[in-house]
Length: 413
Image (tube, rainbow, N blue to C red; front, side, top):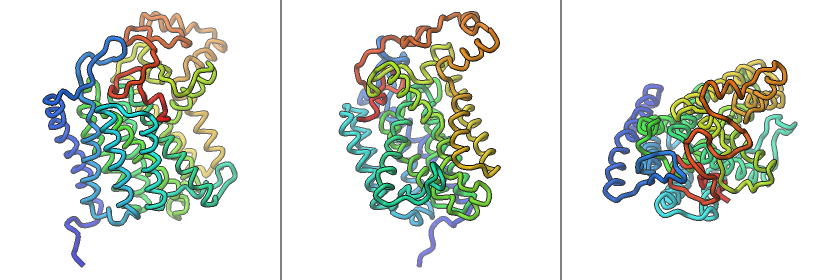
């Protein structure tokens, strides 16, 4: 048997990680030149978008290329069960997302592509959530229940990442952090194929973030956001099974089903928050709007850069808190409650914490905000109050990462 070009080991992990970074980093200038020559831009629109210059939305090409090339040449690609089906699923999402970025596809067609991709990894790669490890009192679940739960999980994660793709560096940075945490856990238990999988994605995103962090010169588009959500959901499925690993269980017990909820806490929280707000207002959850956390922070006067950095820090804090609690071998349902409570405390809740503090301590937070940022703030209003953008029209648009009415808000259905 021929020996692989690269030997197994931690050094090789680092080499492949760097390769992924470099492919993404050097691919983006080429993509930008092609976009400029072919006029493939997301053009600014005073009525809808935050950016003031025409910016390409083809960054997903670099992310896809960096991940698929770097992981495929690693010594561990063959060790990932059903990798060929996974590659096929990624290719489907890549071309569907690319077409959507160029000419705009209907939400139904994108959903069909997502379901096809999920079907490939379930039935081809045998990736399945078939054990809850005590969550809601459930352990192993039958196949006919596991399949729809897996479909639902992947679709939710894909669209949760799509929903937070609204300002410079947010979706890419949150995904890079999540993937790095997943990778560290996989590496700890010796699951090197999945560890390399995670680190390749983090590397691809770091190369992309050099150009996407505020002020962004390229956006990832739906190509990038769909791929990110899909790749993170694959890591989630594989991570949940870690409670069956003795090394992982000796440290974290049965927490593998809860920790991914914390790792992906911000996009999941933001999605649930938007759904709750719209149901409370008797609005369709599939209509576009401006109720996302990043919209609220921008209306409070924060810049794109500071909003992204704040949410990076809050996401890491959530993982640190829940990870520490998991070390105490708490019941998984108590951990789930801790994730929910901590998310409500850590992430913005549309003034809920300020109103509670005002009742308890009698402090006028509205007056403080007006003195601090010079703006009035009405949490029930959807229009931005500091001039960042304009109306809350129902027009569906897909090509701008800086739009307030993202098609992402349609949750792809």
